[in-house]
Length: 298
Image 1: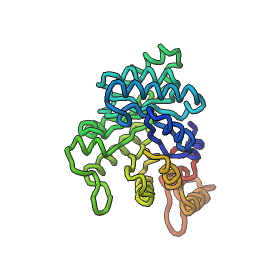
Image 2: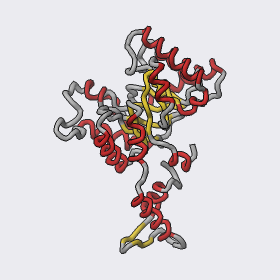
Image 3: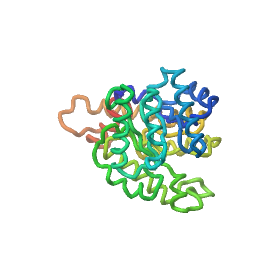
Image 4: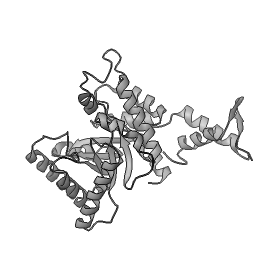
């Protein structure tokens, strides 16, 4: 993806249960940046449920091959019995990538990469074609391993965080303050650690789902807050969330105006310092302005 195209695209990664033909059809009409066809928590736990989800994913991609470029498949955890079947099915169906749940450090990304190597060879697909997004905060151990993401990894395109599985792993009662809806401290820590790890290893930081899918105001507020922290994209669990996420992650008119003024202030400057409205600007301001305008990087 070029930086400019990346900026102009949407910002929403929409989870879709792969065993539901109606939900797949509805999601396929959405403007989501990526569709995550779910073989894990979005479907039943029994082997026959997983098999039905794989079949649904293959059938839908077979009928809609043009969608493959924006499809990632959430496989089951690396220690699950059917993970190799998940990987082979995703690669054979032509998915652009896979989402790895319950990732506990770079070693898990490498293990998945080895499975993808074998699956691509078996399918006659180009080597390295299939990307990886890792969900890295679903276990306490996963959160502790986040500082190990210090350098780029083959295939790794994004790190996503989530609060629901983590709450269960911590044996917590809730991950949000019941009065305000705000994330509680352990989950803010996981969020921030994911953001820092993603930027450190050159991957896209993807914000967690907002499970109250009818609460548009809360979703919008969280998108704005987390974009300000540095997240570039956000996951969703309902098609109605896509438009809210895309709008909230787009720089507003005031931000764009500021960015244009910063670029103009640096025009013709020989050094790395400029002035704007009585304030000194240096290279971090210029870099941020270019990011807002989609001129370099997400």
